[in-house]
Image (cartoon, rainbow, N blue to C red; front, side, top):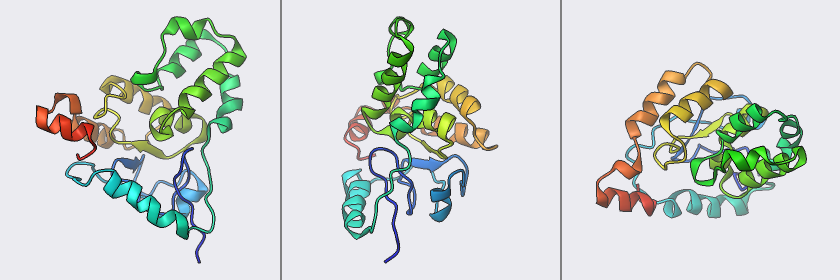
Length: 205
């Protein structure tokens, strides 16, 4: 049986196509060894109707029991050394902008933390949810993770300007215009008609 790496929390390397809402930062991204072993695809989330439970969750339940091993590649503690180096207030503020809006703290809170508290603060934020959302840009910045979620604007995780700034800061492998066009084309779920907003909230679209 072939050895399989599988995406669990924390973020892992994958030997399967990227999920319908995830994309490599460039087609065939190879910024990490495990990703070179698998097939990465770059496709739009537009038009994917099946819900998450019928898609990624069902696929996970099928594939995990077949795996000989599960490799956790990206995990919060891997960021500890890099986060310990975030010492100035400006660098703290810049890093905080890479945290999604729903879990982002006020600047005053970050400014009042000691250095060791800053590291724990960011690790806690990243580890508290789906890390491809909560820490995607930070993993790109420090661990060169080649994956980003393509629903960051759609799900109101970041503004379009924040996504643009984050890509410039963390890298886009010369696909900046393509990525930004995709974000703008999809738009925001909060701007959809009411029925589609309800469908988006339930994961149907």
